[in-house]
Length: 243
Image (cartoon, rainbow, N blue to C red; front, side):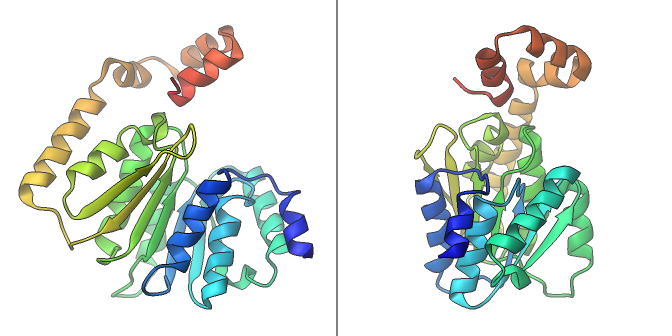
């Protein structure tokens, strides 16, 4: 009862339906996930808390959570300890940017290490989720699951089409929010050469889109200045890729 009441004081991402789908992915998996990784914990009240409790309910598994904002990271750790004390022993926080943290984390593991569940909800640049996926994919066994938030926004605009081209994954896009929730299950060890080539072509096309080229070429300070000049609703839509 007390921990449930604490949930109300911890700000978290994902709506009720997204949290249900995330929880069920773990609770209904044929085998209890032993290793779970989340990129982008924020304050811990959304995906982090629900993944952790689902693992605890199954009586197995450990969650590693990556967060790049120091002040958020420290508050998140305190929140998890308060709201899920009984399950906090199953959680290891990792501070830093995913492209640096994930390779280091993987290098520290023993031979044969596998990732059974991954949830990607980190930075707003679309290339980040693709990089995270490419780092984790070789360690994810057949039958395991990957989910990603903001699948309909800029954050997921590369991963969704990229993953759909790879025939060793089965992909579903849950249209249960404005942001969208991607669910994928690995169905074979590696993609066919044809699907791999198709995925690389679509990714190259996305990278060369004028908007994405401008995002790389235009200095970040200038982009920030332009966004600050715009009305806040419009600025947010442009930054997030909302329609």
